[in-house]
Structure formats: C-alpha cells, structure tokens
Length: 327
Image 1 (cartoon, rainbow, N blue to C red):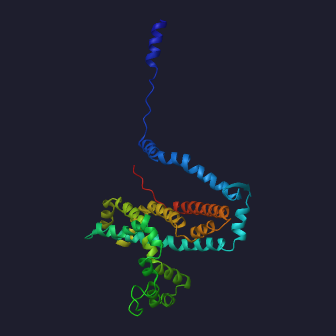
Image 2: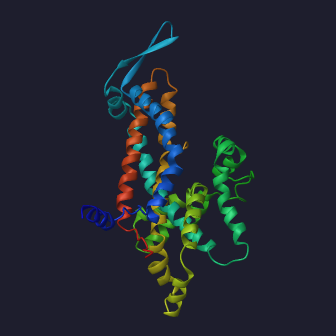
Image 3: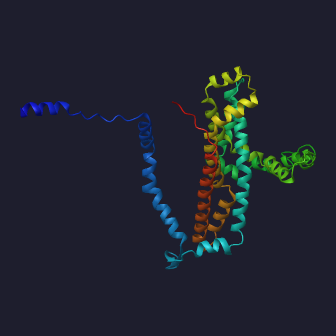
C-alpha cells in the first residue's frame, strides 16, 4: 500500500516548467551584452581618470625638486570658490554659454525636423540631398575640424563681411542680409516684441553653425519618419485630414521620442563642443601657470551644469512623449 501511495504521489507531483523568457527580456539581455565592452572600459579605464580629475579639483599642486616632481596639497573647495566668486570672467562665460544654448537648441531641432520632413517626401534625387545635408557632420570631425577651427579661407569667407571679393558693394554677408531685411521693422508692424526680433536675427546670423550641427538630428528624425506606417497616412487622407492636421495629429506625436533623443543629444553636443565658449575659456585657464587645479574645478562645475541641464530637459520633454503600443 505504501509503495502504491508513493507512486501516486510521484505521479501527481507537478513537473517544474522551464522558464520561458519573454521577447523584452531577451532584447534587454542583448542590449546589455552590446554595451558590455563600454561598461568594462568605463570601469577599468575611464572611472579612475574621473576620480583622479576630481582629486585634482580639491587640491593644489606644489612643485618640488626644481619642478621635476610635485605633490598634491589638500585645498577643499578653495578652487571652486575661486572659480565662482574670484575669477572675473568664468561666471559671465557660463551665463553667456547657457544663453547661447537656449537660442541654438530650438533652432537646430526645428531646422533638422523641417529638413527631415522635406527629405522624407518622394522627390527626385532624394538620396543625394540627404548626403548633402549630412556632409557638414563629416566636415566637422577629425582633421577637417582642426582646419576649420583655424583661420582658413572657408572660415574667413563665412566670417568676412565683404565675402571673397574685395569689392564690398558686389558681395553681402549674412549680417548685411539680415540688416537689409529689417527684421525689427517687420516684426514691429506685426506687433511682435523686440525679443523675438533679436532671436530671429541671431539665428540668421548663426545659420552656418546651425546647419553644420543638424546632420545627426536630421538622420534620427528621418529614421523616425520612415518608421511610421503608411497605412496611418492613408486613413487620414480617406478621412479628409489636411497635411497640416496630419502633421500635428500624427507625425509630430509619433516622432516625439526622436525629439526627446535629439533634444538631449543637441544639449550635450553644444555644451561639450571644443568651440564652446566655456570649454575655450577652461582650456585658456589651464594653459596659465599655476592654475591647473583651478581649471579642473571649473570643468567639474561645468560638468555638473551639463548633468543638471540634461536631467531637467529629459524630465520636461518626457511629459510630452507619445509611445505607440504594439500589442
């Protein structure tokens, strides 16, 4: 009887099912494996450098043995206080850099989205136009960037008020075009404030940099536009929706995740560019004798501002992001 009871007990015992991982978990695991080399490199290589940099920011360097070696002397927050309250230029450069950021980021996003919408249309030579608008991204990297930063003929032409030729009457610069358009007079007739006029004027005067920094954002927007199902647009057309209504009701919400990505990318790209006014000033202070640790403290203050700006931007933009459910 006991043997029969044991056999029935074994038969009635439920077998352990193998865990079946969902597609989301498999995708997440693949993502972690893909980023694993970066994580290892960050921990092994980059993190010690970051710690050493922070150590320099809270110390001062004292040279010994006729400058052949040095020792670190604890200074606490002295470098940070000197950067914020003693240095006469650093705070002004920070404020002007953030003001320029508020001007550039919306202009870059609007321009890149506008170009992406145009290039997503069925036009002749669409691939060639895409390549042309991405060329500035290639020109702003590597050796060409170093040539571009130096006073070459291209940059001289872009900044010269008389263009290439010597006759100023035959050529006009961007600033002269803006002045000829008389934006302030136009906006005053439209009952628009002077602040908007200055904003538009600054964008037009800075059009070269805006186009130069919009290539990556344009490609991301273009990828988002191509991911929208054509059936959605067909249903809108059948319902009689106009192109304006289709853009704001369908296109704009569907690419809102791309807007968030481009918004964060543009902020980081603008704040960490080598031509950024704050970065240029920090490098200038670093080149001065005896101010090595001071420049490191300035860099850490700027890093904190960048992190705060990215977090605030991500939180604000995430409130308006629409994620399509694929059930």
